[in-house]
Length: 143
Image: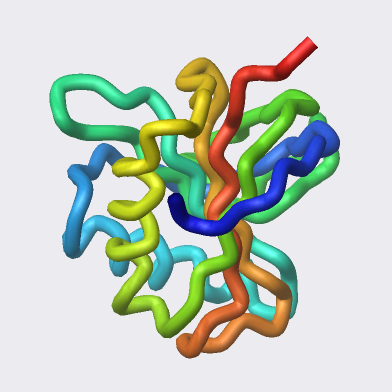
């Protein structure tokens, strides 16, 4: 099992651009990140994976905003992610190997995933192409 820790997140209110994608290398991801680059410079940013069905998912590149904020562009969408328990996986290596980390997470047999909550890639404000990100996967809360 890939090493992780369990963290209780606070509620997030995110805004950005999204598109449907399939797992693996895709020009969709590069296009979304390129489009958002002027808005994410110097800020923590997020890649959010949700709405998994038929082998694809919605990928949102976003920044955190105040609820009710005016969005900078007409086609931006918002997403609220509730407070929840997440398994947090630190990605080791540059961005070209993130698929390997995702694959290891998907292969984890003992991870009680909660698919009703999106998975989140959290990128630090000073991120570089050499790292500075963690993958947050929602888990079923143990009572």
